[in-house]
Image (cartoon, rainbow, N blue to C red; front, top):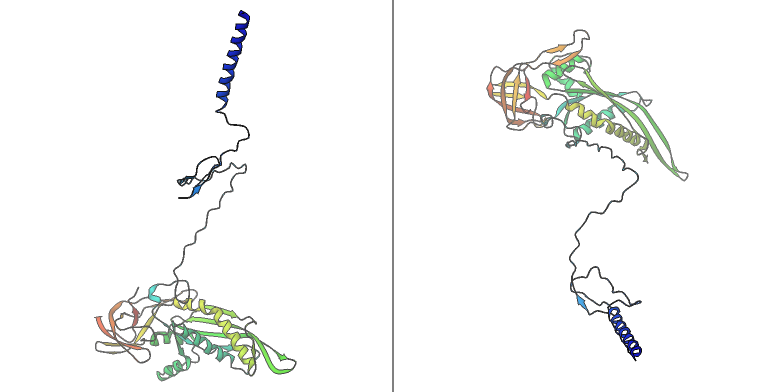
Length: 364
């Protein structure tokens, strides 16, 4: 009897333990159940259905931007070379480098002489053509006043000044002191070659190409010294001409190429010359000067008048170093522009001016 009661009690305890075990296991996930889908971002107002859950609507706040993590590299990062910085240069109209302001507004007076023809085409007036083409190009820049050599020669002859050539230093210095001329230009033309052929086997039209070499010499009129020589050479491409006078046209193109190559440095060198002019006539408070509209003067400009300076000659080389600035005598203000290139100035300071005085601009 007691054994039966113990057996029943054991069975009862086992049933209670089994029920407790079933209750604890019911809260664990079942094997094979699908995992809930994870939604990283939900656009505002969009409804998303997740399996086993109700429909929900939500907005995720934007993630804070975090710098990308750098993976450690086994190789050391290459060293960056220091960056070279170049200072910018302010642009200048037409040509560079930039020059002081006082050199921009006034045009230098230049006399262009005929170029020497050292080519095999002696019958052609190539030297005169080069001088004319150079004069036209300089005038187009509006920075130079070109004067005809024939006009200068006639002016000297009327003054009774005898000379053999305008290229002589004493003649140039006279032109500088009496006419306010800053420079003379001479040169030579060499190595002109012409290639010509028929345009086709069935055509009699001629096609021509040309090359040329031009040398220009810039001479300071105040000293008669050669400042610099410039050489320009033209390529054969780009000079093609056909039809009547094709050879002459091709040569002109070659000359233009040569001049264009040296025009910029040539103008830069001219700009380094001091701008001065001279007195043509004095009547009371009116001073007539050899510069006007062409030279860049304007009504109201103030010009200073100096005594003639002294030319310094190197004692050993007998080479002119230039002119010193004489004593300041006074100033005039431009009141009228007349003629092609002349002006009248009213005296605003000083007295005792003479025709040998030097006139300079006050702009610095």
